[in-house]
Amino acid sequence: MPNSLNSNALNQYAARFTATVLNEAYRNETVVKGPELLKITPVRQVNLGILNRLFDQWKNTALAFRSIYFDFESEDVKSALQAFMNTVSQNIAVKRNDLEPLFLDSVKDAITLLYTPESYFEEKLRAMPESVFTPEKAQQLIKYTQIHNGIAKALADRLADSNADSVYMTQVIGWLYEIKSDVELLDDVTPFISQFSEILTLDSSELLPVANASSHAVPQNGHKQEPKSFFDSAFSEIDPAKPVAIPVQASSQQRAEPGVAVLSEIVSKTNSSERESLNNRFKVDIPKVSDENRYGSVQVKVENIAGSIPLGQRFMFVNQLFSRNSEHFDKAIYELDLVKSYEEAENLIWHRYASKYAWDVNGEAVQALLSIIKRKFS
Image (cartoon, rainbow, N blue to C red; front, side, top):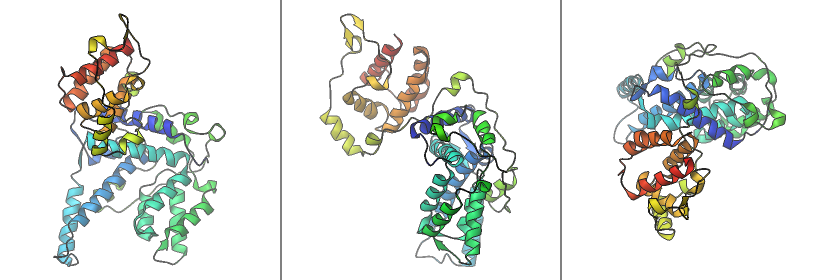
């Protein structure tokens, strides 16, 4: 197995996959509920990744109730809090803007696990709180891992064989290095590639170094868990060996439409005050739409929208059109660059961005953006 993936290809695929699924899931709904998340894609590992992230939020909510002024060790309090949290977990309802980042990360995680299990498990282990591995954490790792589940089980077995209540994470990572080459613990990646490709074709050659674009065939593993909350009962409602897909009938046009762009690291890491400062430093006067980028009387055509926006104008768009959120701006420009006609671009602008960000459609910034888009399709 390779140790790394092409990060640009991974980000782009995950963005397009996410957009394709969510466009369908939210076509007639404003929220997606818990049971729907269990079957939102044919790839159960993606669905489990979303569920795992919601589970972490659920636990954090329970911890937020604690206070030094009350006895949370009281059996009555513990029982009531558990009942309340279980009720909350049965009423999951997620809006698109809130689900999208969880979904995107889950897709990237699932593909990383599929092709580079060593990297995936090491990252998950290092992210565990308190830097210790316990039976509870081992079981959660097993529960939320479908692809290459044998590795998660092998780590849990190593912990059990140690007869320790917990071990430091450095020890567990050492175990990972010892078992990573055991092909008996790895699944055949072919069925999972097919599951991804039901939504959007997954091309291994784009993600992997050429020499490593291969698969290993070994049996798959499953798991069951006694239901208590939604996060427990969810696992009894799905046959691990038979992923269930939400009906997605995406046209070729929809499949080419991304939901999340590759993020601009420099801009996304700056805070609002830094962006304002940079905006002042690079402030430029935006020419009138009718005069912009013309040579004589002929308007200059551009190959792509993203590459034709100067820095000062970029900051104007981010600040005035996208609520100072450079990630939202990058996502929108990426989507606009993928459409095939000016009519499609207009449809995106008026039906998605203008309404979402309450644009003044006759304002200078909107007109400047439209002018750039027209130049691509002129």
